Length: 338
Image 1: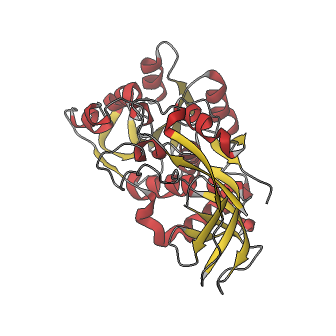
Image 2 (image 1 turned 90 degrees about the vertical axis):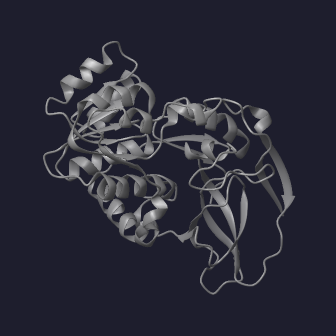
């Protein structure tokens, strides 16, 4: 049996081009004790992957040339030498861009999926890592209080859309920021945000100010750049800023010289409480989040949409498009029917 995989072939300078990725076919190795073979159905593409391609110090080690491109997948167990997993079990695992995965049954990045919480693809989105990121980032770092105003950037994306909807569930005013009238209409009309401001429109800063008459208590940061500069003056005393990412800087030729949200926030006269976080900080509470997110989806109070590409070979171009905001909702690649 052959495994198709995409490996990291060259460090990018700016936007990753085709030479940064190499498609390979290798034999699937036989299982050792306590291992399982997973047939991948879905691959998640996420902005953090771009940071892993840079050879700079970060919260995790950068990828090395020749590594399988980092990422989370969802699929089905087709063979097992483990007592903990059986053929037919649905799982999610963080083992990169490939069509088959051999995995130890005690790998901390391996999770059994309960489809009663949502579809297999949803476990890479609204009830998976992006949903958990929204859940813990807002609740634990944002520390929301009923009646406060939340602003979230990239509001139509996988994380941002969940942040705003959870804020509404918790009794906050939710104002989104997104690019283009179609995305803004979706955020307002389908997801139920109080407002959504188009950062591409003339007068963006003034429209945002008008939408936040009582200022901003929580700014959930996904973007950076001009969006952060527009939100920063509106932050109230005691505001909190969970920093999930800053995608506007990810393709900078030298990110170490970029003006990041940290620079912008620290330049304010009253510096808000802010910190970068990663969802792995709450790994021991994943089950709690997944069940709660799944319940909200079933109740209709947490909605989502997916951008789906077909085939592993399309992953690099879909990845580039996602970094430019071309996706609408969670960006996924369908690898196979499972």
